[in-house]
Image 1 (tube, one colour):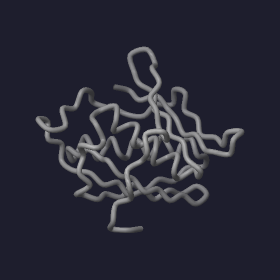
Image 2 (cartoon, rainbow, N blue to C red):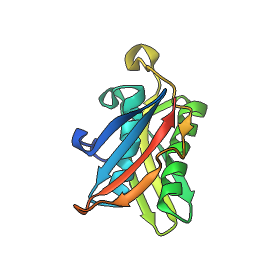
Image 3 (cartoon, helix red, strand yellow):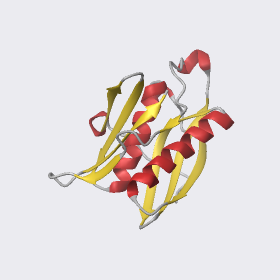
Length: 148
């Protein structure tokens, strides 16, 4: 992988969708890896403006699962773990998956409450509406509902 963070994920590649008291995140990409990175970006956008998060600290997330839905679940929860334990927020993501393995890099910084003004705490990715698939137009979709 690389020490240089990738470019930010364009806004047209991710979105939120409401779910009772929680929030859904949806990422799109021409590859599965791009869709996963876009879903992670959408997760940050639930908390704060991703453009306000400087890509200063790099962490790696490793996951292994038999299907892409569980890989997405484990990837997002790996990011939640880093946010909770190390007080980080992320704005840039690079994902590489091969079969049942995922290696991701996330760049971010320590949470600065005054500057980032986090509006919610993401407790974790859930199995609710968990879906990873290639759509009819050929692009990938990766989504789930976050427990907030």
